Amino acid sequence: MAENPKIRTPIVCVMGHVDHGKTSLLDRIRGSSVVSSEAGAITQHIGATIVPIEAIRTMSGSMGKVPINIPGLLFIDTPGHHAFTTLRARGGALADMAILVVDINQGFQPQTIEALQILRNCKTPFVIAATKIDRIHGWRVNENESFISSFNKQNERVKGDVENKTYEIVGKLSELDFSADRFDRVADFQRNLAIVPLSAHTGEGIPDLLLIMIGLAQRYMSDELKLLVEGPGAGTVLEVKEERGLGTTLDVILYDGTLAVGDEIAVATQVDVVVTKVRSLLKPRPMQEILTEDRFERVKSVAAAAGIKVTAPNLEGVIAGSPFFVIRGNRDEVTEKIKREMTEIHVNLAEEGIVIKADTIGALEALCKELESKEIGVMRAEVGPVSRLDLVETETIKNPAFRVLLSFNTPLLPDAAEIIKDPLYTQVKVFEGKVIYQLIDQYVEWRDEQKR
Ligand code: GTP
Ligand code: MG
Image 1: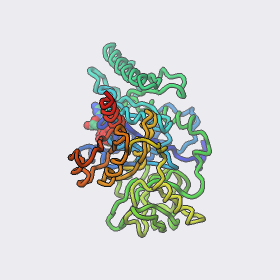
Image 2 (image 1 turned 30 degrees about the vertical axis):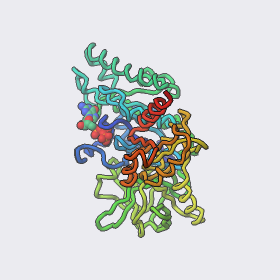
Image 3 (image 1 turned 180 degrees about the vertical axis):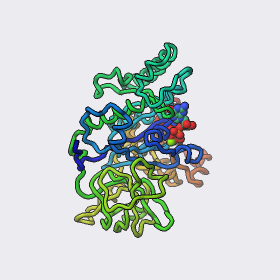
Image 4 (image 1 turned 135 degrees about the vertical axis):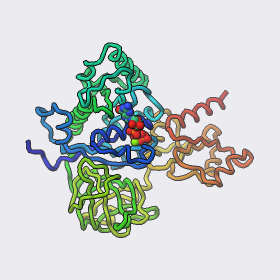
């Protein structure tokens, strides 16, 4: 079947709690060994992998009859404690779809819940991968088989165990107002979340997961406009890296359009917007991890979606998370757009409310949306560490219940840390945290206590 070369590769974010198996799952899918090469097997960086449709076809086995017109899937792995909020596009989340990984033996953990809330707020379609089924006591391995086929070969006790653990996940999801079921019992994927029990170590259940991802992509991404590759390239900078012999390079996720050698591009630095010309484009080979691959393929151009390394002059000082645009036409329009994206925070500020700070714009927005849903007003929202000036400004809030600063994933500068120790100096209550809803819970608990 001829595939339409213009259809964009859907971007899939893999999310979930630390150590629940995100990297291992992708690793199994791409058949390399990123996990074993990572320091302490903890993901230090965000990586991207394209899995071409042929590879998915082979792995899932039974897709022969399914008409497929997407070129493959671009998977993005995120470290456990960093939600995909750092990756943004068009003022929203970058991902078209997501896989939420949950260790079937451990069930829901703080970051699982955080990921769910982010996905709900961003309206991103997703499936649940219930991983590590091979750890269920007495599980008999049937390497690479579909879940159902392997499940049917297990004894009654093991089957019962899998059912119970799956229902625990269903129950947790229902507490959070998601209706879910094991994927083979889901009739309407639009209304119900699918849970796919699987193992990254044995490959069981992975064919089912891939089939469902392709199904989701075909069904919900078939909004052709969204998927068509059009015009000048647009992307997000994942990482800024020094590479020997290449100088400063950018690892970019291109989500829209095309990018070619010689193109004029614009990206943000700490202080300004840089306009420069692409010297070379280095593409990770299919099935390889952009961050561990050292032998890149030089290409003349790429089309979305892709993870691509860009070399160009004057890239020093570019910020990870910056928007990335190809200029074809008005240069000022593009640089203005970048400036706006870097400063404009898509949050509704209230007349009366608390102050929040976070490490990235995406995280700030995620925190804001969650506060909004709890009807807690935010008066100021900023990216960056907490400074003494932030405390001084928060101090001026009259209502003591709002004289509060929530700091998400961002440090207190020494001068700020010093003065919050002294109640004579500042009345501001500071809460720090790395999980959004826990941070909010801390605040709400404190606030309600004050009322008594
Ligand atoms: P962070 O990136 O640190 O958030 O972790 P992660 O979610 O990427 O988890 P990772 O893939 O690094 O896996 C954590 C541990 O669980 C490793 O020791 C893996 O070998 C193990 N593991 C992952 N998947 C499976 C699985 O399906 N079965 C078994 N038995 N172990 C698994
Ligand atoms: Mg990982």
